[in-house]
Amino acid sequence: MEKKWVIAIHGGAENQSREELSETKQAAYEQGLENALMAGWRILKEGGSALDAVEAAVNSMENNPLFNAGKGASLTSAHTAEFDASIMDGKTMKGGSVAGVKHVKNPVTLARTVMEKSKHVMLVGSGAEDFAREHKMTLKPDDYFITEEKEKSWKEAQKEESVTGHDTVGAVALDMDGNLAAATSTGGLVNQLPGRVGDSPIIGSGVYANNEVVAVSCTGDGEGIMLSNVAHEVYALMKYKGLPLKEASAEAMTTYRDLIEGDRNFIAIDPNGNVEFSFETNLMFRACKKNNDPTYLAIWKDDDGNWEREE
Image (cartoon, rainbow, N blue to C red; front, side):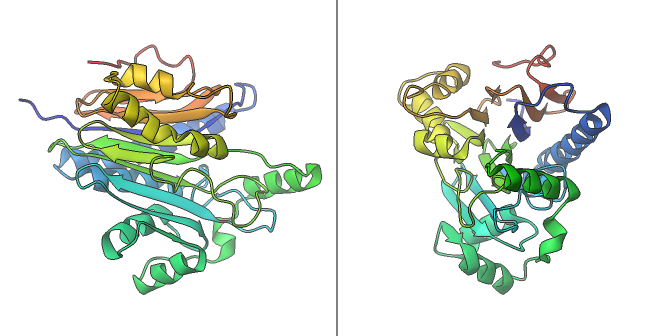
């Protein structure tokens, strides 16, 4: 049987209109997505693990100030950058996550280090930072993470006394050995309370991976995704209801919609290499590459003309 390797990524989902996103900025997003996708794809092509691939892809977006993760994170009401991230290995069913972390350049790598080097699944706040220092991870001063754009958004939110935005980055992958993995990382909401934690670091909520069924990474309204356990919901619909990926993804977006508000957006991949980009917003920054096939890269909801789903 021919071996498959597939990676899909997202750089967040928003309700911007085409008029609000300039051609120059759209091109920058597309380049950022391409860079992140290829960082993971090259690992898979060389026979590397899905876990390494999703970490590399997310690292790339954490280092890119366009995306709300790592450098370019949203600022809290206290004018601080706080990060949440998680990673899960579908082969071993192990996961790691961090929440409310400052100064760590690549939060998803810290999450993986928690998974591999500690007896815990999640570390938060100063304890997570101490763990990062213990393991010689790269730390940065506060001003490294603050961009002009996020500063402007913070000032507007302060003036309006609002909490806005919900971007997150993530990746899912299938490697040549049939292993799945998923990773998610975020800088949170603009003007959120210090210490607020969303869905991104919660296993089963913002991320989930199981070799037998699916790998999922979410983005959207963190509170709503957390309450509806979106990532695990996709898994459960496939595992226990027997739904294929496409149908399970569609149903997971609407479960308890009458009780739980907020958009639920995610990417998912199954053991056969099928990929779904599920989102309710006007756009999702997204990309996918299967084997040596042409790259699929899209932003707007109607950019699906060349996208093949179920095989």
